[in-house]
Length: 239
Image (cartoon, rainbow, N blue to C red; front, side, top):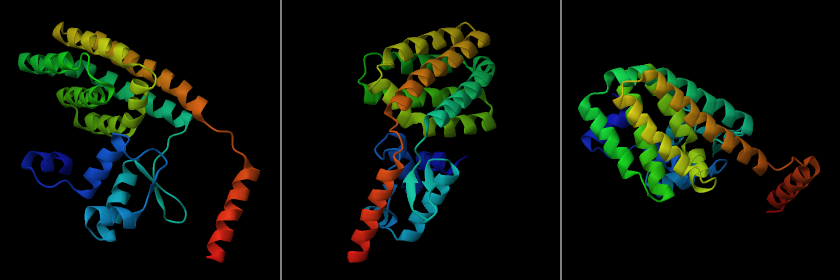
């Protein structure tokens, strides 16, 4: 059992890494945002040492990136990386589909049906949280722990981007309709159909996000960047 699962099961206080991971997943800490160790330590009432350890743990998960000067930021994915990671999610989840169908008991199907039904007509933020839980449940049902761990890491890494697809790109209705079809595939015992649906589910969101990410990229202006760096250096030296 992972430390995350253990803390949830026992009701233990969440770790620094747990809190930061959730803040990143939900987009409360935006991609590219600096993570100032002193500020985090002060906000959580701890020293900098456990904060630094937590940031390094999240870096190992791909959620945090360290620069050459040791500063940490929330990982910001380029359009190419969005494409790659979303493709990886599609491959992992679709590969788990036959096992999900085989392992799903009537009580599992009832739980999934209720979860998806409760997602109808939710606001985007609440729907996104339930969507994360739904895919986690699919991973659990696969009975494939290594696939589930990898898929869970990808799911967490992509969740803030998934929320953009839901809230900005209006993908919620399409995704929710696909969830209902996934439930039917599980009920029908059709692993091939569930695999196809999971592939399509990720492919559609991937294409929408890729187009959005490319539209948001600003062209790199080396002269402007150098001027800004020069001003920053001058302010530092004069201070």
